[in-house]
Length: 225
Image 1: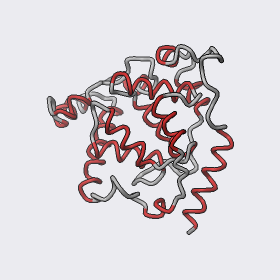
Image 2: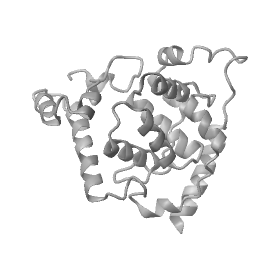
Image 3: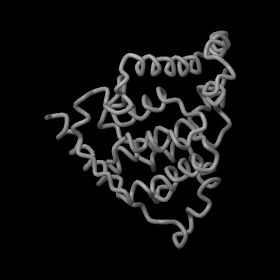
Image 4: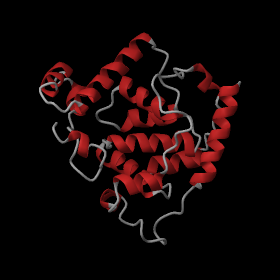
């Protein structure tokens, strides 16, 4: 807990608690974890537990959120929903090593580092302009620690449509996220060992800058209406 704030965003490190499976299956209670977390002067992990309960509260009072945006205007977005690109995202074949590493980790072990959950979700909803509900449903089938409230809350956060969401104009750059959180590509090398070989690794399925501009235009159009 003491080092959690320093290590939690780096997927190559063993820097998270891995307690999500226990919470999912009820082998430990949120109160037990919160009690232990509150004993530490470092409150970052406790804050993450509070986020989990916050999303549970949102789902309870707003049961429509698995199917509809918390902010109704976001349901007016004209998603591209390209099935071929969605399949590439699912399989970890987007041509963006960090995105592909996250998806391959998910597909292989049924778990994905939280930083990558945010980045892969942003990529699907904003770079590919594919309905966040597609991604939420895919995660629900693959995550062993799946919790509807947390998953829906996380996806709506990434898409910009949730309660305390990232602004719609905040679009993660896969390159910048790699440089910041996997600078030595240790995580990427583990899950995408062929990424340095252009004969084995696919080219990016979209240009990030072009996709960013397309996303901003689509979101602005929906929110104006």
